[in-house]
Image (cartoon, rainbow, N blue to C red; front, side):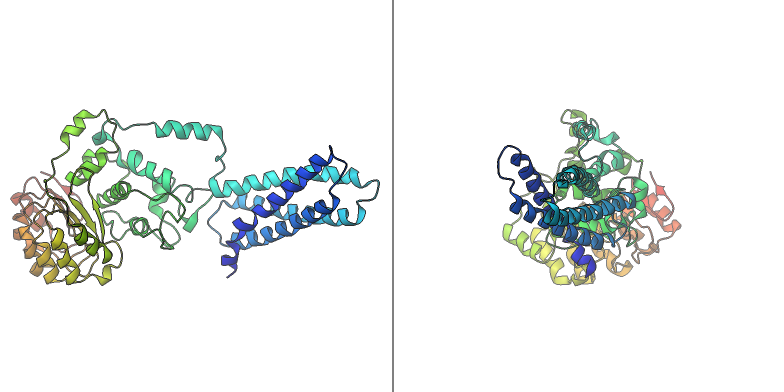
Length: 454
């Protein structure tokens, strides 16, 4: 309850600022007018003192939730607020009982200067806690403008974390997750801090985007209390979410370039938007997507109501990216069957971590346009995997943390267009992987220890 009450500090902290500003304004105009506004000033000083005390108490309550703010700045801000409250209270009593004394003005006007300076210093440190210490620095503004103008000339040579992922964090996340303000004890200013996680542990699980807390939070509806960025902040775009999901899915590496992570057709389309417009060589490498009619609007809305996120994979295509991000345990065969209403347009499907049955897998096997399929951390096994052998256009398949064994090598070998396969933490052996590699020489396989390339 104390922590909750403390959250009203930002509301109350602006009251003494307004009262003090009005009070100092009256002192200024009193120089040029006969009236000294003594009654009004007395009220303003009282309100300044009371609101300052309230803000200090609430600020103290808020500070009890340690770990979110820089300890040194927080301590300075706290004591400056307390001293401001004390001085304002003393000025009120002196003004009430001694303002008619001849010597009063000798202490009163210097105290106004002290209040003005202390108010600014306290406010500056409060702003630093909220926005960062360099929020008002001209150099930061210039650097930000310079950084915004940087273009990626060749997306294939871009370092994924440095050139794509980190800029997203800087724009949408770093204001709440920096060295001076660490919400959830999570720092996002460096790769090492990001991978370390926060108060609830790791937020990124390499190769498993579905179980990564970061991906779950950015895909929550804005009205959800845990949604990130929080309500009032600019949310991530679908393309930004896709980049972060793909990066984690590909191993959440620090130094690898786009080309090294071998993006699929859908991801290539999205990545192209992050490149400079003059990159004609890259635009030629963008694969052509199947030309299909637009999915039925009613069918799409019907599926979305069930808690599924559906977006087009690019502007100039009708192919869809379909993901179950939340309420995975409520997934059932009926929901899988409804996906058949958009089977011609369904290009990417993420059902990782859901409760799928043999019947659901049979429905998935009918999605002939499917190019990327995430089934990690499901009940998939050798007995029901055969239903997927009809996915003739499948290029990327994630089977991480499933019960697949070497018995499924024969079925996997029938997926002739398959380019990338994840079998980390499955029951598939090195012998089975080697046999699959012989059957599909061009296939990249992510196993327990290494990539096996053609």
